[in-house]
Image (cartoon, rainbow, N blue to C red; front, top):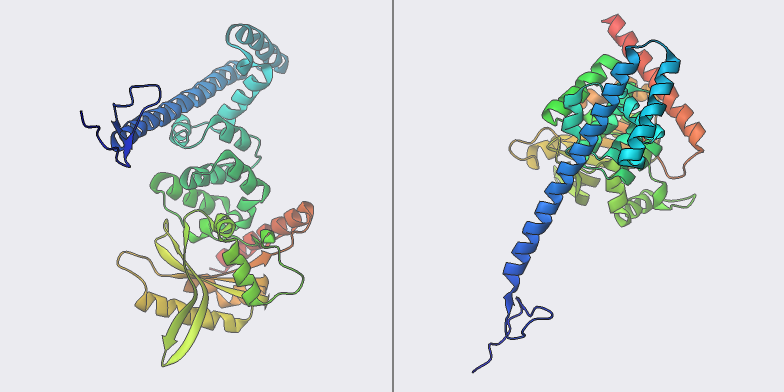
Length: 362
């Protein structure tokens, strides 16, 4: 009998008759079915676990709130833990039961929890529960869901004070909540959720003296980490994008596309302070991109001017955001966390005061 020749897509199974050859495509298809089923099972198991923890926490919370004595609350949690741990294991320790109660307290809407469990694991929620500001917690939860952050990425974003570096943190609570509701209900990203200030570029490893070209080259070398700092919906389009107007050539430093906003995002890098002339340059680039590069169903392009130092009064008087432009500082050498935190909180306070003054004048 003539032996069948083996193709590159065929596989000879181990520990079987070598004359039986399994088609490689068939094997890969079955592997995909198995992995897909495992993934769905893991998601279902995660959702069931998180929902259980919420229900347990909510039930205990309801019982404790029904009795005004704080001592009763401590006693009931301790007693419950002893019974449940003996029957179901360490997952129901006193510490974990208290965490479940906190979970139900800071996420009171069960439907929101159910929606988040499609992307967030219990470990994600554990990182979110201790946050003091409800808006801050909602921001990280929704961004985590939309951008599909791992637990490690979520912790890095929290440690990097992402919320404090986005424009939404500088808005009055009512307006900030409206934007988060849009994100939750429609997956609609707004510039105030996307852009940060400052951008943390310490991973570029730049020396004390460097040029704009050095900064640009370092960003491209560390593009993956730069995109993580920008946000996962960004994709790289071009470097030194050539723009020709009236036979004159201009070169845009970096061009990106943001999938969630459906916009091109032009980025200009500046070594010094923001200057009023920077607005005119970026405005020219945005008008050209809108005319020649924007595709059907895309929104107007936006511009981000990254400066070593932000000129706050210039930015306020020029009203850049009305023209689709944003100015932000970048830090290539991070200050101590306390100083960065103090700087960001001061920026939030000043921004909210400016909004209040503008609303009062209107």
